Structure formats: C-alpha cells, structure tokens
Image (cartoon, rainbow, N blue to C red):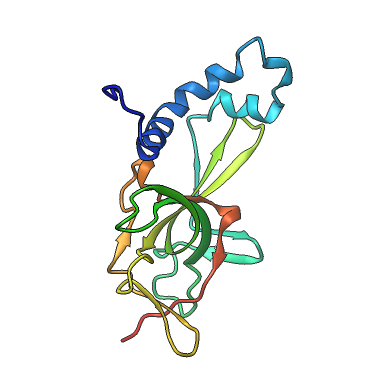
Length: 182
C-alpha cells in the first residue's frame, strides 16, 4: 500500500495486519534464527489445519449446554443465547476518529459449532453467531429491572469474511437466556 509520504492510520495498520498475518506467521515461526525459542504450540499453529472440520449441533462448555438455534427449533428450552466480552478496536466517538481498545459486550444467537483440528495435536472449537448491534440504543437496552433486551433485527458481523468476525472460541462463550416476545 502507498501512503504518499504520510504515516498510516491505526485503522489502516490493523487492516494490513489482519490481511497479511496468515502468510507472515508461518514464515516467522520457521525462521531458523528463532526456531529454537518458539514453543511447540506455536509451531503446531503455524503448520495449519487439517482440511476436515467437524460440526456439532450442541456443545457443553463453561458449565453450559449450548445448542444451535436450528437444533432447538420447537423445543421449550432455549440454549442458543451467547454472550461474551471482547477487547475490540473501535472508534472513540464521532469527533474522535482514532481507534482505541475497549471491552465490549456481545450478545448473539448460536448458528453453528465447528471443531478445527490441528493434525491431532490440538483442537479448537468455534461458535458462529449472529451478533446483535449493541452499539446503538435501538438494538440493545437494559430495562428498569436490569434485564437486557436484545433486538435481533439489528445485526452486525453478518458475513463469513474474516473482518466481520462472526466466530468466537467456544471457551469465550457464556450463556444468556432469551425468549421471543409474542
């Protein structure tokens, strides 16, 4: 990318890192100058994934049994509500367009459960969710009793592109109870 003599913004730098990391990381790890200081875990990560992943419709973690929203269709119990807090790059305000890190709450509906296999050395389970837009009052609010109200007609991160981030590690997930007002 060309910067025409100017310093790139933090947003531009973050986009470059997100785009190029997947190619940079394995090259860095196999560098003979540092290979003796790199943990086995990082070496396994740099080797990449097997071409096959497993899918589940339910998964037990963090003391909760999660189910995909499709799996629980017609059931009386609802276990597809996912909550997590994530340190996220965001713009401070309309007046201050600089990126900052903030711990933001995310409320979502569990759509898919995928287990990635790193050649039998370790596995990572991902939850793919439809995330509510909690940055605007119209998508999320807390009522007088302290209950969170989530409007899933206002979604964010709606595609499979990496920058849209619909996935979290299952270990990050907490459950929240949701019901539909009729």
